[in-house]
Length: 447
Ligand code: PLP
Image 1 (spheres, helix red, strand yellow):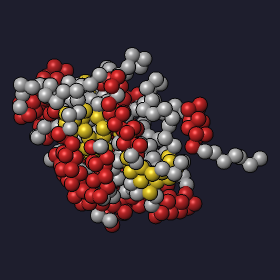
Image 2 (image 1 turned 135 degrees about the horizontal axis):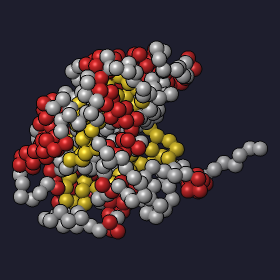
Image 3 (image 1 turned 135 degrees about the vertical axis):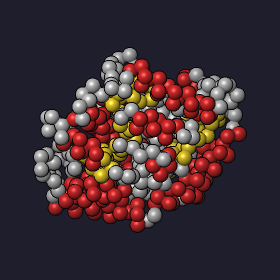
């Protein structure tokens, strides 16, 4: 039987009848019916009614090279025909996975030379946390398994990665997080620092807090520290000057592995392949990445780590690394990753992101004078506007005011997608965005 052609309302109704979305709010949906996106080209997406929007969110921080690239589709299609799948377990590999591992080793800073492929960011973080235990155990420190993270961090949505992260709004009664062996330090948010502290004093306090935690819990128990160089969905938090470097130095002093969660900051979002060393002077022991690794064309994540960690684990008493996924090193996903990197290099998208991102930072400041806007912040193509009830006290509007959702909905009416997170409107467009498109984003937001 031929199926009837479906219209926008049909898809929305089917979705509402059968789907459950990530972070769906059962009572407070952002809009009455879901937006049904059917096409995408560059920074633009189109819904089933034919309306176009500039997607300033870049999917979910991930469509870095922009949508609709024929050569990505061809690379994915060609690999699917040639070899759609290969078992990644025990001494079997495939050519795209081997090539991409070598490419990532070249692009990663310093001695990060080994890659374990995962299915996305959450599973990369999960693996990193487990690797901390493998590493220290192999070196004769089996008690060094605790993980230190920060308030307002987001590290994924598996049980372990969500427990390591702690976006305060996500912590609800109905769900029990893993708490044993996980410690959360203060969020390094300069805008919301205690009023009596300068930014430098605030930084001193944050570092002292970590020192005190190490003294209290013991360096023989703390195995790893995980940090997004810039906290992304926690609210585009750029830490105080010198903070990450000082936290890293503490890690080095106490044999604590530094895990940089670059799921958002990697692959050009702030103008570098990876932000830790290039932007913040930190040489991490591990990097987790996903999203921009394939620009969202197909799922893939990676944990990049050093030979030193590899060697230590390989000499451990059990001789096993008992972690991995059916889709680790998926040939089609790795072929997409290779093509994605090739496009970024050939088109100079990293320097472009740095340039257009600086322009965006400056242009967005134009919104600072608006009565609702408490803070405008960001770096390159990771930006947000924080809405407040009172600019002087920084008091927030009540949640019921839904101001960032109302702003996002109004922008949508004007052909722009920005993301409401709490009291923020967040932007992370494709790296291909032009200055003209930045002007449109800022002017629309201002209206
Ligand atoms: N880490 C960070 C910093 C993220 O922002 C995200 C997702 O937004 C993740 C990890 C989880 O990645 P995924 O959703 O691919 O599992």
